[in-house]
Amino acid sequence: MKKLVALAFCSVLLFSCNKGGGSNQKVDLKTEDDKTFYAVGAMFGDRLSNLNLTEHEVNALVAGLRDKATNQKTQINYREYQSKVQALFKGRMSKNTDKFKGKGKDFIENFVKKEGASKTASGLAYKVISQGKGANPKPTDIVEVHYHGTLIDGTVFDSSKERGKKVKFPLNRVIKGWTEGLQLLQPGGKIKLVIPSELAYGDHGAPPKIPGGATLVFEVELFSVNSPEAPKAAPKSKKK
Image (tube, rainbow, N blue to C red):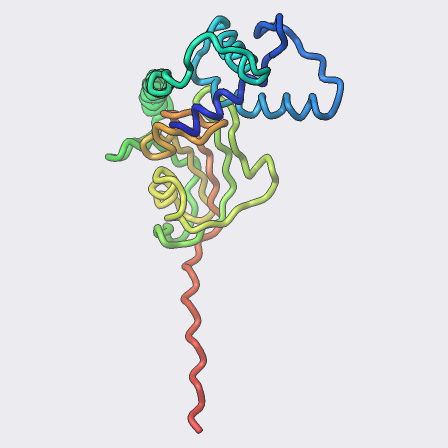
């Protein structure tokens, strides 16, 4: 939490920090240094996007940064607010996480009803688009796949298909929803997985692309399944 708060304060570099600047004032990015500082602000600004800040709250952040960065006297003893800062961030993030969980639950229910999908005891929803042939993978197997991952609003956060390159990995080294879901498929098959947050990245998410509490949607095509290679035995030394 302390690291998140520190990064969050850095993120106000996204906004204007000059004497008359409010959050809506544009900054003329003339030099590469200007653009670099803006990039820093944009990267850390992603970490604030889930807090649903008002314009007034953004301006308060800007004022605090400006006063300290320019060695001005701060309007409050900010060191006394450390616990309040942490509590505020935790509360805002928790509220936002609950919102994402609620929307995800509704999405899964609609997916099961409208698309004729199935749901496992763990909460994973899935629909086999095409079944393959052969043995289903075990958790310890190495699978080769193509996948396309989105949030429930359709925002793409990762896609091997878009990169045009299949990937291989041990099935037990990924999120729980993948480990469970791909065991329902055979090589050559394709499946759609709707994975609740508790089987994905949980309440913390995977910033900046996956918010806390997010339900994830994957279309996965399984190409091959291979057992992990057994470690090679060390050569026996010859006795003289």
